[in-house]
Amino acid sequence: MSHTATRKDLRTRSIDISEGATRAPNRAMLRDVGFTDDDFKKPMVGIASTWSEVTPCNMHIDELARIAKRSVQQAGGAPLIFNTITVSDGISMGTEGMRFSLPSRDLIADSIETVVQAERLDAVLAIGGCDKNMPGCMMAIGRLGTPAIFVYGGTIRPGKLNGRDIDIVSAFEAVGKYNQGLIDEEELYAIECHACPGPGSCGGMYTANTMAAAIEAMGMSLPGSSSNPAESDAKRKDVEAAGAALLRLMELGITPKDIMTTQAFENAIAVVMALGGSTNAFLHLIAIADSIGMELTYDDFERVRARVPHIGDLKPSGRYVFQDLHHVGGVPAVMKLLLDAGLLHGDCLTVTGRTIAENLAEQPDLAPNQDVVRPLDNPLRTTGPLKVLRGNLAPEGAVAKISGLKVTRFTGPARVYDSEEAATEALLNDEIKPGDVLVIRYEGPKGGPGMREMLSVTAIVIGKGLGESIALITDGRFSGGTHGFVVGHVAPEAQVGGPIGLLQDGDMVTIDSETGELSVALSDEELQRRAAAWQPPPPKYTRGVLAKYARSVSSAARGAVTD
Image (tube, rainbow, N blue to C red; front, side):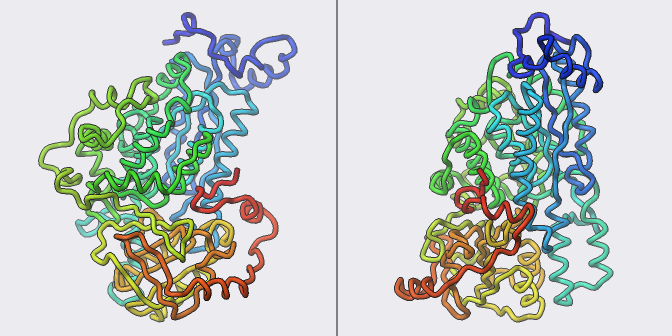
């Protein structure tokens, strides 16, 4: 039911269009899309939809957007659905197309900001469902400063094959198994056909589910909405509730800056560490913080990591998928556990208009006798599994996910490749041997350009049984589905003269996940000599999206932002 009669005027921007004889032409356009006289008295709310048929992650979001539209109408707003792009990492993985994945995040943010600002919308409800459109939505929300809520499209259910759960990472790892002769073509095909059984984002604690959990912990999504599966009544109720919640935020005058405080980002990092999330959280949380003018650094991640144990036994290094977490209480139950242990800031404001502590007081505890989430006194690790490494190979830092690793220190000769394709060919030809450190460079934000994910490579490593017998470092990045002894985000990247660009075959590289060391056994003098002789390679693109991206993008250590 509409409450517009008793509400204050919430038309903070749309009044530019809704009032005055000079705006008759503007209103004429809106009348043609369905606006009535009454609608011009209401606040205009943008429903930013990431619906697309190019990926299962987002193929159901049009339905959710239309539910959200009805909800906003019932709450007294005048909603308008608009779309932005999405790309599928899983489809573009291992190809030239993956170069466009991370740049799409900033394009999505730019497009939402553009529509909301151009159309003078008073608030935005954004619905995202895949790795880059989620932080893209949040970056736009941060820039705009209007009341906003984010709704996650939800996780996919597991695929089933021969009585076991599989997912998209199973398919990537099957390629390595097939190459190694461990499975035949028939089994490879069966995995391909059963890995993705319906709508929703990739099922493990991969990047989409990581960011969903982080956004809820930050207070920008409704409680419980991050872990509700895509194909569930609960997910439809999420968007129904979001419309009313957004109008209440407008009445209260609460904006994202009121919610996304330093403490809120610490809460997000704490949940990511506890659940063993994706290394991409570093890029995206730093970028979201930047959108509101806040500096979030690797040191902030390390400070939170040191006090938060890893308790979520979730894929890729664990046993369970995100839907399993939902069944035992979801993200709110995990947050409640952390709050009770003093590991969350309970006084942070949320999109409910209430604090984290107030929201969690109404949430159930974790289900009894479950083993998806370990007790705090018996964690998988006593500290978070996402580790920042530094040293003479990464003066600005690098990022590793150390969950599930038996090996904590690795020293070996570098095997250097200047592209993902060259490294993949070497792996498939059995040129990389146990004890080697595989180096993939010129794949950073500028050098790629686009900072490709290396899931294809890392999955082949796992599938071929190399696992922790080799290490891999790159100035590119990894999918949330990656596991093994791998280090990404090496900065400065090779393209700008970073030390990773100075490595030669045979140089002895050390990675120590306990001490946080990433170094090469070369003197400062030798590194300086090589740096003096180094010349940057010409850019791979001179026109178009990637050329513009390469010119403007920052270091991975600063979120690879383009502002």
